[in-house]
Image (cartoon, rainbow, N blue to C red; front, side, top):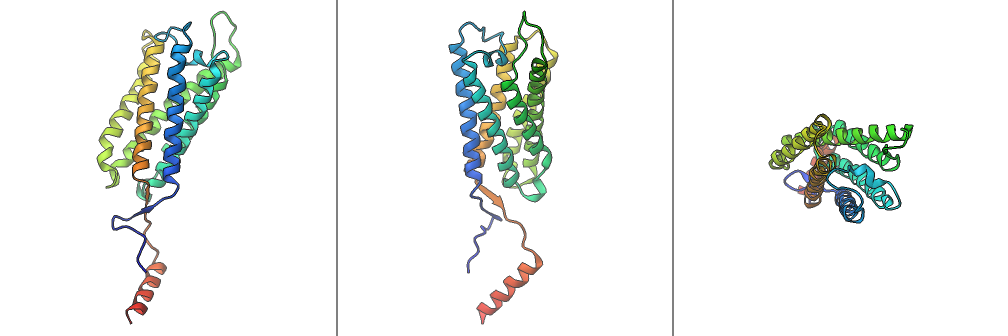
Amino acid sequence: MPSLTSASGVVPDPLLRPMAGTALGGIVLFLLAAVVLQFARAELDWIRTPMSFYLLGDEGRWLQAGYVALACAIVALAVGWYRALPDSGRSGAPTLLFLLAAAGLGVTAFAPTAQAGLPPTLWNWLHGVAAQTAFLCVTTAMLLQAWRLRGDRRWRRRFAAAFTVALVAFAGVWVLALWRELPRGLSQKGLIAIIAAWLATMSIWLWRDARRPNRAPSPATRQADGTVSGSGAT
């Protein structure tokens, strides 16, 4: 009986394309909601107003849905890339960080940000912590996940681009945190665009190569295969 394993040592994985499609769809929904609200919320200065203020009010429900879609996308992408890499390239660290980032996004979406003229609340504090957690965790996970590509011959050619963009995003988080004079809205949205572009690109790569590494057969399996082959030869 012919083997289903390809000569390159990879086999089709029926879950990778659904995961990649889910990730890409969630990213598109988030970007669509974010861009539309830049025009729909004319009372907000898009250069100076951070994304958190677009979550407030009735219109904010659309962006909340976008945040949830992006969180689901990050989870799908994390699991998909864990499955796509060989055992030697897999690590729980980026997967865990992606999951923490997704959780942070969910909290950010529904815990309101602090507003001028109103006393601060516990929810305001939770929003700030969750948003910072999401930014830091997702960019760190991007770096670690990109670094893992270098050790696999299928993905090594993607390493330089993935790692460079991840490094720019990671540096951007710290620039945003330390350089307070930057226009908060423009700088934050630029960073979000870089992160979203990286996530979308990784989703497309995963979709195009929806295979998983074939694990080496056990000694018992090899012995059984040899026995079957020997029997077929006679």
